[in-house]
Amino acid sequence: MGKSYLDPTIPLQKEMGVQIYGVLNGSTLEFIRQECEGEYLDDCAKEHRERRGMMIEKNVVPDIYKLCQQAKDAIGFKQNIDFYLVSDTDINAGSIESNDPVNHPHIIELNAGLVNLMSKQELLFVIGHEIGHLINGDGQLKKLAQFIYADKEDDDIPDFVSNRLELYDLLCELGADRYGYIACGGDLKTSILVIHKLAAGIDLTKMNISVDALIKENQKHLDYFMGSNKSVGSTHPVHPIRIQSLYLFSTAESQDQLEKSMEDIEDRLNKLNEEDATLNYFYAAAGYLLSNVNVEASTLQKQTIVYRVGGKCWFPEDFINYVIENKNIEELYHDTIKLLVEMDEENKLVMMDFLLALAFVDGGFTKKELDFIYDFGHEVGYSDDMVAAYIKELLPRNFRLNLTF
Image 1 (cartoon, rainbow, N blue to C red):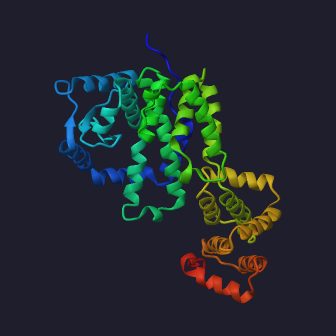
Image 2 (cartoon, helix red, strand yellow; image 1 turned 60 degrees about the vertical axis):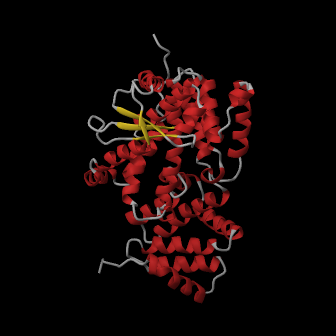
């Protein structure tokens, strides 16, 4: 009997995938995407690989073919895959998920640069990693987002979507690493060495490095970067996170222990820098106060608050509920205004823009809401004339018709 492993699924990855799919109206737009693209993209992907390289077939490259099948068998993946060897010197591999793997197999490509650098055992990890992406359907959300935002630059995609996709991509890598680990027979040393090779092109096998020492050093590296006050997406290295996650998967004695040990990584991945965190507290507090000046917040106002908080926070509703239930809202509102102005004078307009968006979103801009905004303006040092001028400046992108006449 072969070695047994814990379930490689990362619950947070699945939860994030469901959230993004829902935000993007996936239940309807994914059908439209597949109707529009049909078999075209699958055919294009195959043709592109045929032009750039060669299919890995048993009678042509038997050793690599055997490794591909061995990785599939180790993981237990039954769907059709066409494996390609591509004439590219980059140390990389990739997978393309098919909408119809029965008639159009999935594609996994191995760059020549990667194959030349890796041992057979290391290639098993790489192939298993790519199969893991197929198992988890990691490419589907990217395809859906690209379909929806086809004509937009990356900077034009809403933060609510782009930040989630960025963090989801990282979780996808952590999940796929677990399948790579399984494919190479639970060889932690090989798995870690591959991650280093892919990250920096460094072959640590030639340096006779102890894996135990490497893991210990990795923990220091991880603590330094993830303990800083910088956002994960901009500067944090990916490979220390991957190594730590894989180490936890390989050493956990139960599924509960594994998920518990992963919580620290997941929490720190969602750690915000000081300014973003303060802005979120302002959005929650100011949003609650302004949206309730007319007795009760409208559905559109609640959604606007969630949208702003969710630009930097994975689970905005949980955060908002925490603030409402555990903080003095009035005090928090005034404290965050003071802090944000001290951090950057331009935050005055950021806050004003949010308040106007919230007041106008349901089309019912009331006198009480206007008074609230003027009071905010006075608090940040604006005269009445300045408040009116800034409202005029921000009005075009925030105005909504009042259709309740």
